[in-house]
Each structure stands twice: as structure tokens, then as C-alpha cells.
Image 1 (tube, rainbow, N blue to C red):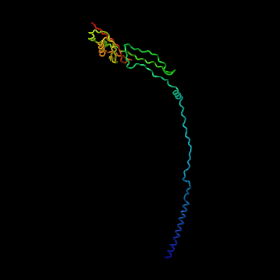
Image 2: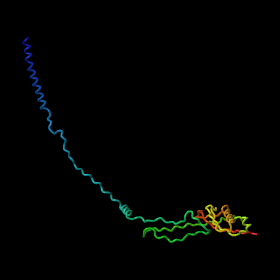
Image 3: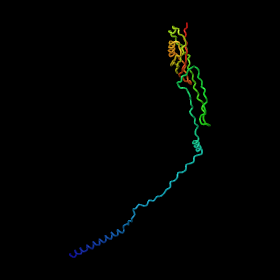
Image 4: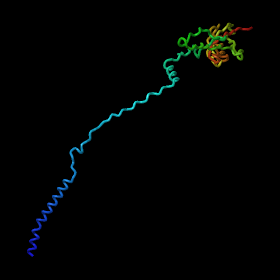
Length: 223
């Protein structure tokens, strides 16, 4: 029994040394078997640039000959200048006096219009046709004012001349006594004209307008 314990204790250091040798051999083998990392493996590769030429745009397509001719004509040939016609007319509210028809007025023909050699000539404007106011035949019997009794008693006689403004409706809008033998006859004429007188109004190209007309009335005592 004593001999068995002795042999058991002596074998333990030999087994431990063998184990150490085996472990060291394995570690050495793993060390030599592992990959070798060379310096510079993880360094950035060098940057290589390459010049790529950009293609040029194609040349513009040639235009048809007709378009080129029209384009040159538009760029080089200006249009003729035609000024606006000048129309000299009387004012809209111009007053007409008299009973005669006012015919077209004569004027010198206008000079050439536009550039020399290719201008446009315009006809001169036609003056408006104006007709003076006249007595309306339907009211011709109502023109004579009544004779004031006071003037009859005084024996006042004579003619009264008055200028009346006739509106577009034919009525008297204003009256101006030019000549009268007395104030009584003037007042009688003025009241009667504003209340009873009716006329055909003046016209401008057929459109009624205001106009003046001179009237002369005769006052005479009849026995």
C-alpha cells in the first residue's frame, strides 16, 4: 500500500510537463499558421482622374430661303409712317345763326403725307353740313305778341328786334332785345317768346343743336 502511493505521487510532475510542452507546441503552430498582415494593407488607393470630353451641340438647322428673305425684309424695310388725319371741326355746342344753309367750306388740298416716294395721301375731311334754325309753320300764327293796352293808350308804335337762342327742342331758351321803341313792347315780346314761340332747331349733320335767330316784330295801331 505504501508502494502504490509513492508511484502515484511521482508521476504527477511528468504529466504536467508533458501537458505544458503540448500546449506550447500548439500555440507556436497557431502563431506560424496565422495570416501575416503586411504594412499598408488598409492605406487609401491613389486617386486616378480621367478627362472626358463634352460633345459640342449640333449646328442650327438652316432656315428655308423664303423665311430668310422675309426676316431680312422685316429687319431692313421700315413700314411707311402715316400720321393721323387732322379734322378741324367747330365745337359740339357751337351756335348757328341765320336761316340759310351753310355749305361746305373750301380749303387748300393737303400736302403729301408720309415719306417721299411711297407715302399715303388722305382726302381732306368733309366739313359738317349745318342748317340754321327756322320758323315752324305750325306755330307761325303765334309769333306776334299781343299789343299792350298801356302802349296803345300812349300811341307807341314801331318795330322790336330780338335775338333768340333756340334749343335743340325748338323752344326759346334766352332772348336779347336789340332794339325797341319802349320798355313795354320789349317786356311783351320777351314774355310771349319764352311762352309761345316754337322753331325748327338748327342741325349739324342732321343732329339738332342750339342756334341763334334774329326776329323783327312790327307793332302798329290800327284804327
